[in-house]
Amino acid sequence: MLVLPYQAPRLTALLALLWLATTPAMASDSGGLATLDWTLAETLMALEAPPRGVAQVGAYHDWVGQPRLADRVIDLGLRSQPNLELLAQLDPSHILISSMFTHLAPRLSQVGDVDTFSLYTGEHEAWDGAVALTHALGEVTGRPAAAESLVEETAAHIESLRQGLPQGIPPLLIIQFMDDRHVRVFGEHSLYQAVLERLELENAWQEQTNAWGFSLVGLERLITLDAQLVVIEPYPTGVEKNLRHSALWQHQSSVRDDTLITLPAAWSFGALPSASRFAELLAAALAAAPEA
Image (cartoon, rainbow, N blue to C red):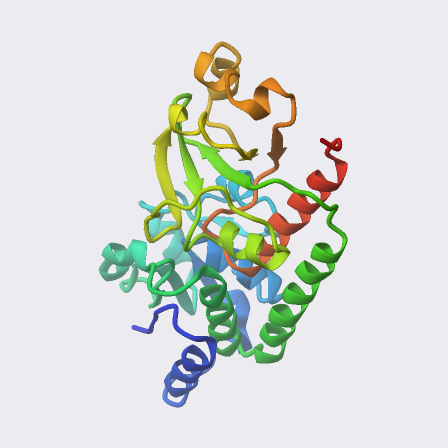
C-alpha cells in the first residue's frame, strides 16, 4: 500500500518516484483507476487521467461542481460503503482512497491494489498539500508534466485574479451550512484560507480550526464579527427556507444590508482544481458586489 502524507511537494514527489522504482506506473492505463475520494477524482480529471469509477457521482457534482466527471464514469455507490460487486466487475488496476477510508482498505484489496493518500492532516498547509498531491498523482499516472503544468497554471490564474480585484474589500467570513443553526467557518489549514492568502484578502475568522481547516459554530457566534459573509453552497435540504424565518440569520449584518455573497459549490476539502474554482467564483462575486 502506498501512503503519501501531505508533505513538501519535493519530498512527496521523491516518495512517489521511489515507489515507482519497484511498481509499474498506473498511467499507462489511467482508465483503469477507481476512487472513492472526490479530491483525488477532481485532480485526476484535471490531469486528464479520468478514473473509470467514482463513488457518489451525483453528490460529487453537488459538492465539487467542477471539473465535471465524464458521463461514462461509473458510480461506485456510497463513499463509505462502495458497491464491491460493481467494483469487481469494473476490475480497476488501482483503487485510490484517502486516509479517511483506510478502514475499507482490507475489503477493497480483495478487488484490486489499493493506494492511500493522506489528506488534510493539519500538519501542512492546504496549498502545499494540494501541490504535493498533484505531483504524486502525476507520477503514479505517468503524467508528471501535466501535474507541473497544473501547479503552475493554477498559481498563475489565481495571481491574475488577484490583480483584477477591486480595492477596499472588507475581511471575509467563509461559511458552509450544516443545519439552520450551525455552520462550518473556514480558517487556518483550509483550502479557502490558502486561496484568500494568494488573493491577498483578509479572513475574518482567526480562531483555531481543526485539521480540515474549519470551526463548527452556532450562528450567534457570527453576529459580533464585522465581516463580509460568503456562503458556499449547497445548502442542506430545507435550510435555505428555514433561514428566511431565522432571527439569528436575519440579524447578520450581511443579510440585513443585502450584501451577502453566495457562491456555487467549490469543494472545501479539495485540491488545486477546487482552489482555482473558488478563486474564480469569489473574484467574480467581489467584482460584481456594489461599492460600500
